[in-house]
Image (cartoon, rainbow, N blue to C red):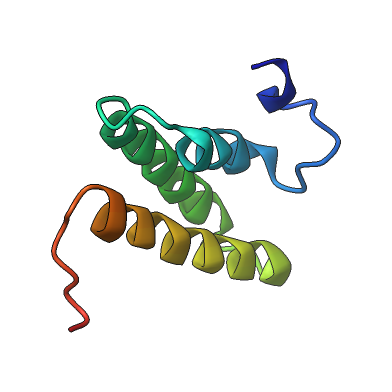
Length: 85
């Protein structure tokens, strides 16, 4: 998929959005768990980088939204338990 390169101008935060988009677009249920793990790992690393930065409010909000979407994929597509219920 050529569109998921970090140089994709449609991505505001390519450090983690490349892996996130790959998870969102994965249709193979056998590959989805690995895509989700990769997206979560990329997001975690970016959160660590942002931890001591006073900037990045928009990115933090985008990360929060992305984590909700990944959680939805986990519960709806993979049958993970929904701990909020």
